[in-house]
Amino acid sequence: MKVLGPKKNFLGIDERYSELETSAIAIVSAPYEHTVSYGGGAKNGPKAIIDASAYVEFYDDETRRELCFDQGIVTMKPLAFGKLVDRAALDVIEEQVEDLIVMGKFVVTLGGEHTISTAPISAHYRAYPMMSVLHFDAHSDLRHEYHGSPWSHASFMARVCEFFPTDRITQVGIRALCVEEAQFIRDNTINTFYASAIRTGLHGSNWQQKVVETLAQDVYITFDVDHLDPSIMPSTGTPEPDGFLYSETLDVIRAVVASGRRIVGFDVVELAPVKGVTHPDMTAARLVYKILNLAFQEPTTKKVMKKTTKKAAK
Image (cartoon, rainbow, N blue to C red; front, side):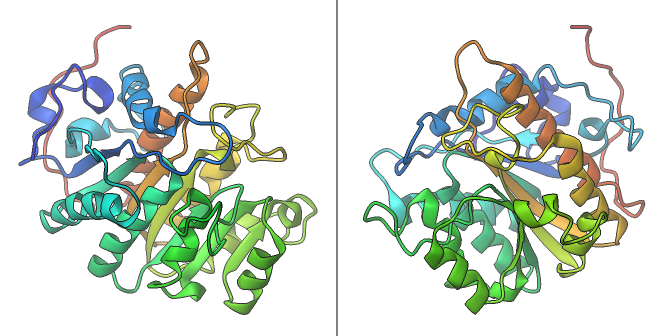
């Protein structure tokens, strides 16, 4: 497996903290884009996130640590798909993710369109067979097919439902779906927290805790950046109004960790960078590092390295 060096890796960290053998965390880049239905550019998302991460501070004030030095983060060379599409492309992603899980790594997968998430979810499900999937999105992505393709980014969760227990799927922030998807949710007991229900108080003021109560002990997170409001995340193919802010979204993940549940892996997808608009790239990069900090917040987490240097001034 080839990895990226300090000038190109996540956070821009020195080689001693980003080696494959010693890092606890692995970043997989899956710049796959084949079925976008509105705005394009998701294939450029992984690189934009990694480039922006060079300007994310190492220190997290909430967890009071520099996680990248405590645990090590290796960034894998971006996957190449050539002419491979659909299931064949997903196989490429799934193989690398599974190999890294077998090596004991905590794996973060960067997309790419949301289609890619089927692969890391499948790989993690084999390793954590009792896990839940926590799905942040504006869309339910449960169409049987879209524009003639069952492998559309609008159908990725329908493909997941073919091998994963539907009652262990929790969706948060959904505000755009067709009537068939709404019926599928009802028929298959998918835990769906619609944006409208959250905004109108149907789940109460502590709705984040209600989300957590639907989850198993092990949790995999799949995060489409269009879950966030377009005011802070305009750089995505299908932005939807009435989205969520950064802090209220993180409160869900904080509640997951505070409950004693374990985040076992996650992906962040659908960033479609816009030239000259940099704050969405930075938001996505910061989101990745923040979720990592929260995932490793448990006091029993074993440290594999110690920090010896600090980040240079910007």
